[in-house]
Image (tube, rainbow, N blue to C red):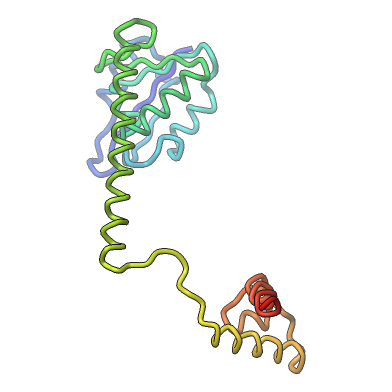
Length: 194
């Protein structure tokens, strides 16, 4: 069965008439067109219209879109989504981009897009690592702050006092010092081991 998908941006408040007409002209029934009016920065699977469509797609079906970027704004999201559909036996055809996996040229376009998506992933990783390296060079520390042994000992005494003398349960007593029950027991075990 042929299904269609349209997406318009919430920012522009566009309507999907142009996309919808193109899909109908390509043989998609109006009742088989699913839509979202949401930012393309949201991953495909997090959109209500896409999720509704995805539940209906089965092996042998064809998904038709006006342009491939209607599936997602990021090349990575588009390729991941198209690869998932392809692996499930669902053909994807983009009317404006000439992407049709049933022919040589369409497959070539998809492979080129996958290559660019991988390149984009690597660029993102490099930028993130450069940011982390720069922050470390400026003295920023990552991870949990170091534990103050004096404060831990004081909190352990407070929780023990509340449990033994005030009749509070461990959960309530630990909350008074901003700890969970698990944190209390972890610090207690660490102190007993040292």
